[in-house]
Image 1 (cartoon, rainbow, N blue to C red):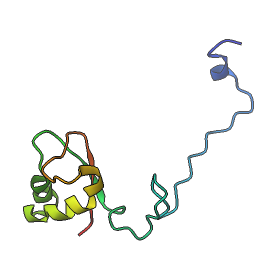
Image 2 (image 1 turned 60 degrees about the vertical axis):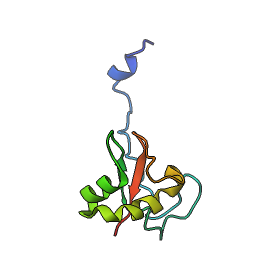
Image 3 (image 1 turned 30 degrees about the vertical axis):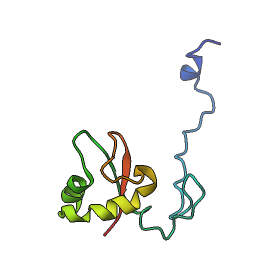
Image 4 (image 1 turned 180 degrees about the vertical axis):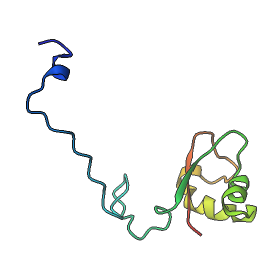
Amino acid sequence: MGLFDFLSDKGEQKPVEPAAKPAAGGTDFFGNNTANNPVATGNTYTVVSGDSLSKIAKNHYGDAAKWHQIYEANKSLIGNNPDHIEVGQVLTLPSL
C-alpha cells in the first residue's frame, strides 16, 4: 500500500465530523471558571509596533482614557509597567 492509496480507496469512508464547540463559559488554560468573567468574553487584540494602551483604547473604545480598563484586564500579562507592552502580545479588550 502506497502513501496515496488511501485517497483512491472507495471503501467505507465516512465524512469527518466537525469538532464539538465548547459550551459557553467553561475554563481557561489555567482551569479558571470563565462563565461569568467579563474579561473572558471580550475581544482580543494583537499588539503591533508603535502601539500603546491609550492608542488601543482610542481605536477600540473611542476614548484614550480607557486604557486603564485594558491594563487591568491584562495586568498579569503586561506586568507592573503599563507602558511596557510588546509586539505580538495578545491583549484582551474587555467589554465596557
